[in-house]
Image (cartoon, rainbow, N blue to C red; front, side, top):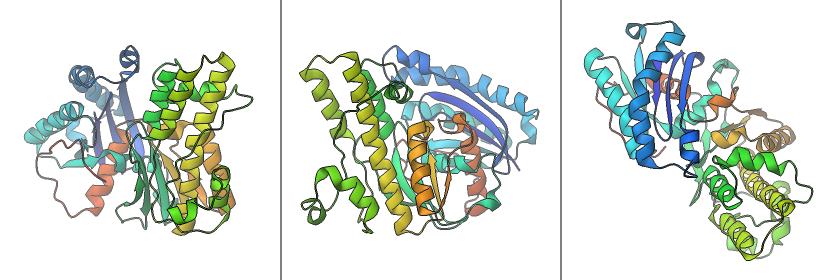
Length: 358
């Protein structure tokens, strides 16, 4: 089955053709990074205008690269949300127009679920073992989810209460005078740190536990003691504020900025990896998956590999860098799963929903 995926949730205009939810015949992405680097972040109106000008050329390029005609497509999958409303509308309107003329099944896809399905791209689905714990970490989202079996919908275990990890990376990079996007920039300079700053972690633990624990030992104790957490939520706004306080309170040397960047990255990685490990242990996962833009961070991948090996479970992340960031191949993969496992008929126009929940 051939599915055309369309993605315009934020600042990437993307289209892809995927066969049977895993084999990527084409994946075309028009990036807006250089455009938004001028302002140090995404301006929604600017992103929307770029989507309008790029969407048809990108879809045409995806079909051409896959060496198929539009008539050969069996279904269309499009990001319905969450995301920037003005960006979502471009993809949704385009997909609705195709549906009006062709009546091919039109599948609305949750962007977060699509990131989860990115780990199925270019892989044999028969090799996956359940239950699976997946952490999605990107510019706008942080979710920890459980997949009980191949046909089950994701069960949300925890999410960000404020800034997502990727958003925190971008904002801290700006504080440190680094380019947008912040994740790759911080990762690059953090490798040069010889003595990273120790920064706080927001563990969000119950008071009956946290009041008796030395804050410096929390991560290690959580990993070593078999506790069951009541929630797996994340928070990075306080960490971001602490970086701002240190930058504003004193004039830091270049080496000190490098150490601060490394300390920030370590704080984020420690919380993300530890809570994912605890969830995998608590729900007896056989695999741990990492997805989303932040999953491209090599230090985060290394920590996940270390903890997965210690737990004796399989660790997976997207096979290509482009499948970590926003792309349409993952939208097509998610669309294929929905077409096979959902009772919906997919015979209606799609509405954009910037607050769509997983």
